[in-house]
Length: 97
Image 1 (cartoon, rainbow, N blue to C red):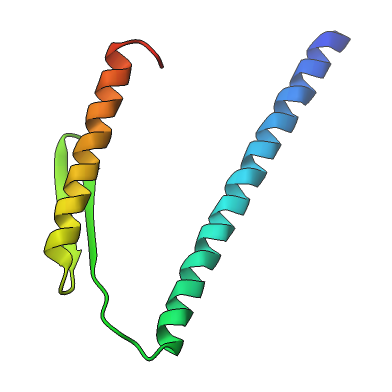
Image 2: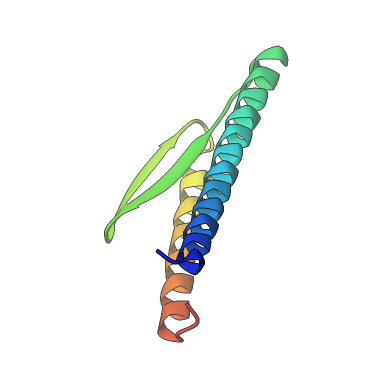
């Protein structure tokens, strides 16, 4: 290997290490945020919670919801999922990716 190839290999390893570090920091921050919200709800004396989600596996959506406002949250999740799918196809068609 030449010295130039060694530099490129070291540079690629450094970039991938940085990306992994940012990914790990992001995961830790999201986990900490969820824990803070859970503890805040418990310290505030409980309350009600609602959740809704849409998971796409291929072209098939799986809709999940629980709580008193689940219908509204599910509808909102479906709209966001359809919008993101539309934007993905629109951007791909126009060749900007």
